[in-house]
Image (cartoon, rainbow, N blue to C red; front, side):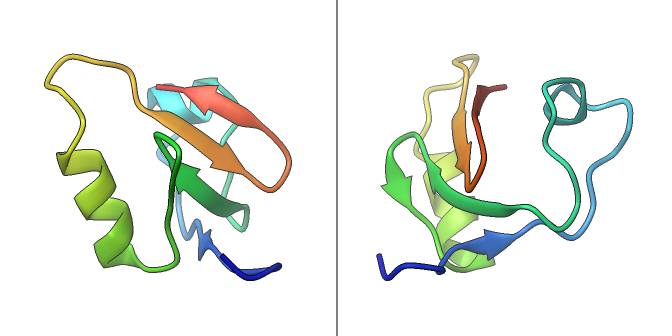
Length: 67
């Protein structure tokens, strides 16, 4: 992945686990479960590849959280 690439978060529901763990709008998601993401399709694919019921690790430009 090139520096500065990723997927910008448009909105995070305030009641969501991601919000509770600090993910906010306008942050850049760099990877999901260690897989680089640069588009909504890549993000969706990475989430779908996760085992049902397992945590998903989201790495942003400033933090790493499991939701």
